[in-house]
Image (cartoon, rainbow, N blue to C red):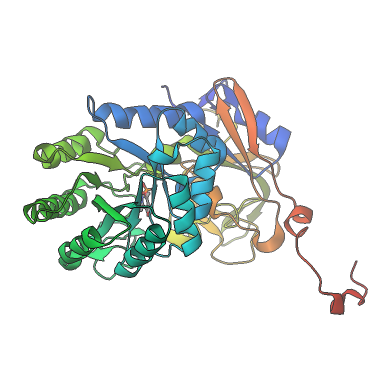
Length: 426
Ligand SMILES: Cc1ncc(COP(=O)(O)O)c(C=O)c1O
């Protein structure tokens, strides 16, 4: 497809819809997702592996809105989940249970029972204790749990410290050196059907070298396990494919697919991928309104109505999102350096310093690009500001897929205990 977000007749549009129409109708902050951009990403990924694409299990954590999951499910995607809540979301959005994988280091008994009852494709098991817990619960129910062992390949993913998951010291997965022993144990446990291996080394990985290092270790392990007579049918390679927040080169899908094909060619494995960010990040923007342009001799601050409560990635990971005004700047219109900040009472509520933007006035709108992943899912009620609404655009159509929650709704379920109730609180 053409660019999902582009200026048309002076107005930034999502597909055929001017974003200002959404901002004016619903107010801001509001996340806007392009259904066709999501579909195009899914198609590009699957096509890169033609004629034998892996099962693509969308990592629901990246954006768990039911409409987003449904858009991908309708294309044939499965779901990668990390909680009972995500399993329920995926099912509600229409993902068949037999396309759901379930990872996470802290699966509770209740979540294990739910996953078994739903009949999911596989548990991605992160520890020996978890393996034994699943075995006990499944055996007691007269069931066999399909299991892949999540291995920790001890590979540094060349990404941000907080989103690297495949090094020895990370909490995820079973140590590479212990994997054979644990796999053999899994094969001997009643209630467990060992199917294969899983790994996920981190997120926003643009360089193929860490993928290659980790995947090589995985196929080496497949060979060792099979040589021991242990059954290994499936290899779940996780997610982590990078997207563009700025001027980075696009992720090289065909090289990625060629790498995987080359490494797995001789093994006749069912392959699973779990991309999250790659499918949805560039398909989403966050719209915000200018409250003030605060200027002093020292600095210029563009003060917005969206902050770390709406999009925490800059404060949490030092991420930088490109910003575009919804009104296209005139040719030659001067750009001013400004620090873009939110309304939250924290110095870390800073989207970034020295953005170069045209002079903007209160009431103008801006869009943060590449905000479709790890945006709304991490939003909070901090400072009791209205939550962002969410909108899905599909061609000329658009719909609210989650309304804004105003403060009254945020505290509606809170309770003042009886012993405080007589103190004059309304
Ligand atoms: C097990 C697992 N799979 C897949 C993903 C998705 O990662 P990404 O959004 O980078 O593709 C994550 C993200 O943390 C994960 O923990």
